[in-house]
Length: 318
Image 1 (cartoon, one colour):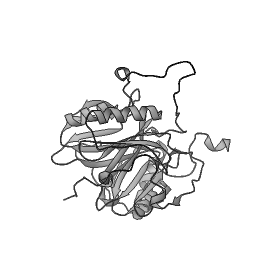
Image 2: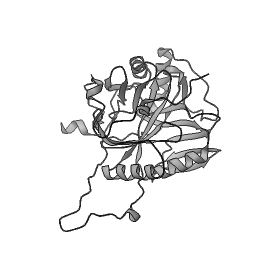
Image 3: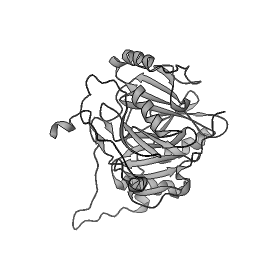
Image 4: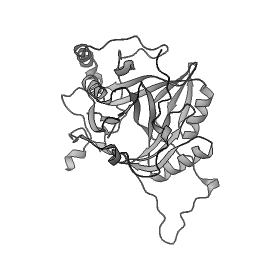
């Protein structure tokens, strides 16, 4: 069993290793700046857009641009190893994908093609942003005879460590699973028909890099950020709630992936999730994917989600 947790790369298997970044369009950049800064991310200006970073990490996880109307998921970008990009081009040719021009203002690097539900997708060479082993998780506790009290006035702001996963709405979960397995080399971790499925990367990743949620149209459900403890999730959730964001869902623990969670509703009706201690699937482990009953697999404990939690607030494409 010890060999199963070593970091590495699955040999002779073509597949993306990370979500490189996601791109959103929002009606008000300053509103986005305020939300993501309070959430604990580093927000930087670049060429009239905002970029999201995590503290002390050089990777850009998201690009946010201004647009008219409602929030919109513009595209998803996935990272591959440099020695696989040519093989990916041949692979996508064989898959018969429809190649597209990059969305306006997007970096043209890599391969651009039409994804499931016509969501623009990008595959590019990049450093592996997904961890090679399960990230550290702590449970702070005061020693006997000492105080663990933290005054409210001294409560620290929390800072996510990295992007954990991304969840999108899709019109057909099973067909989307097949598409992403075929084109990107992702693999099914678990699903709960017909509503949701979770896909992981073959070169070692969290239980899911990409989550699929059933809807009548495409869109973003949530972006999820890795935290180091339940304490950090609670502190972050409380700060966002006190700032007026909501309704939110949490604190709780999921069944599939087993991560602790707190979902913060953003100004546009989608969510950013604080997540901790999610299951990790090493590169040399074949995860036994299963189909689970919805009532047995959404969350182990925590408050019931409010009805709007699964509502897709993104407008349909014209």
